[in-house]
Amino acid sequence: MWDPWPDVGVHLEWGERGAGEAADRGDDLVVVDAFSFSTTVTMAVDRGARVFAVGRNDTVPPDTYEVPKARYDDSARMTLAPQSTAHLVPGERVALWSANGAAVVAAGRHAPRITLGCFRNRTAVAAALRRDRRTTVVACAERWSSIGAGHGVRPSLEDWLGAGAVIAATSGLTLSPEAQAAAATFTAAGAQLETWLRECVTGRELVAKQWTADLDYLVALDASTVVPTLAEDGFFEAS
Picture: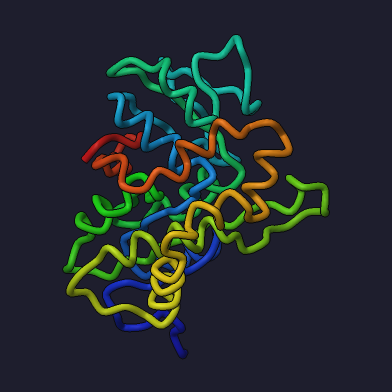
């Protein structure tokens, strides 16, 4: 049977199905949910926390703080909002739900290695790619339901650009046409990158819901050298 996965160093796919198919083939995964699972986990791990990605059928491990699904909750130690990671302390264990990023991680959990990429850590993630196996970068996409337009997922510019940001920072690796296209889009954005991110559908949604403060953290290019990597116990930690 014909296999759509190309014989290259880095490929790009979308969503849960893409993550699962890539993991079935033995690929390493880089999961990009730029707005905001990947960014929030990167910032949490940067502060020394360990983060469990809660998929639909997952049970939260014991002695782990379960983050509420509400993006803002004054009673919570942490939420999905990147700025909330300021409350974390080194060694803290948290369980973070996300309809996109955590779901994609769950779908590809059998991959040899899973790391999280975003604009903040894109160069560090690219440098950490293993050259002895193919990496599939998975752009998570967004839920239509978050903007009241029914169910299902839509391709999202922020995840396409986030994936491209990671891929553009690689060197010496062969790229599939999909990976080349994402990297070229990121490069073409140039000085317009932040404007594109703030004015894309998801960026405008954040503004409309008065979550504008998140955007400063989400669009900060190369602000971190941390590479959140999935450990054997199911928690993301710094590598």
